[in-house]
Image (cartoon, rainbow, N blue to C red):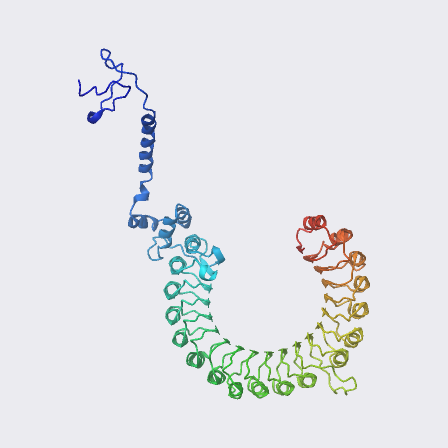
Length: 624
């Protein structure tokens, strides 16, 4: 008995010892036992432990080895089931994204109709895995753009591997600012996505020539390749692309310090006959690369050369006189000190089909070069000049006189060498009847005399842009428009602070039936009288910008009550302090056709009025 009843006389309860025997007063009525406390903790714990064991048994699939789960998941019959299983846990999602197309029992890949874009913090390996699983049964992923956030980017080779395994229909891939991506991830995509046609690799310092070699060996359909700021890519990678990508049509290479003449010249010599678009920017190349391009670039139609500091005048000259680029139609040269009058003339002579020329910050090109280009490039349709300070008014005039009958557009921006014409200068015997678009921006020497000459020489203008020209007044604009024979369609006078209501009145009277767009932003002398003239005489205007002018509620009311029932689609009155809450009803009336409204910096329009406009003009994009 002493082995069963072990108590010392105080109110302790017997725990049962080794035999786990529990006795109650009712079980042995002849034996005295002191009162005991109920085992509340023990009693409450028993059911809990029971249900926990039950739940563990129910969730036993979680303890299956990955090999077993893999075999189960790869046999899922449809994309719906795959997506549902991917939502169970990250572990299941990663397992599903690791299944290749060959390993899956069901072929779920589509034709590649879907597009996905990940930017900043949303660009992670987990999201790429979800895209890989989720798009496979919904048409297939065709276009993927990933824009990382530099060294904080969470996209690695693992994420690209998931895309490679699940998105064999991928055709367009853009990787931007992903330092954690290396050759492994890009190579896996190249091997697994044979349909890929366009690849953009920008700011990916972890990539080397191995990535380009993998692309060249596996992406036979590649037609467009962009390499930007990839410091590990060099000449060997370009040579591999030249040998393997026979369908390549467009190549863009920017700021890759390891790429030089060896890679570029080999690529152009090998692929110049079928390449149509070439862009070379900020590369360590010399005259050799341009010489090779001039000899072998038979298929090139669009050429962009930017910041090639190692190329001299000889390079551009040889590129032109080689006469190998017969199909060249568009040429853009920016910040290349080797572009001179000699090179420009040679290009004009050697590229007989040249239609579009853009020269930006070519400081050694003068009016002599422009005249030579006009005489040699008989097919030229468009010329854009920006920050070419050696070009003066005589070169400008000489170009227009000799440009031929096909020139349609001329643009001059921030060229400080341009001065106003001499008002007594004799007019040429012929006119520039083909010119339709004229743009003069931020050329401080350009004034009324120049406009007067252009008005008498260019009679077919439809699009006129005169921006930031302090020397232009009402008299000059009137001389430009009074001899126009076809009717102006677009007029931009933004920043011309000496233009007044008289100009707008003349434009609306002479060209009110054809005018569609009028921009008077920053013309500080424009008042309500201009809006009254527009409302009365203009029938087709759909884009009106009167920001930072002196117009008020009265002018807005004139527009709203126009007898011509204006069909305005875009109206900008930003910075007009004269417009107040009183214009709300008129703006709402105009809003029946408005798609865009700018009321920024209108300090006298209250927040309640803005709210009302947002409510009533629900289909209009309002800036406030």
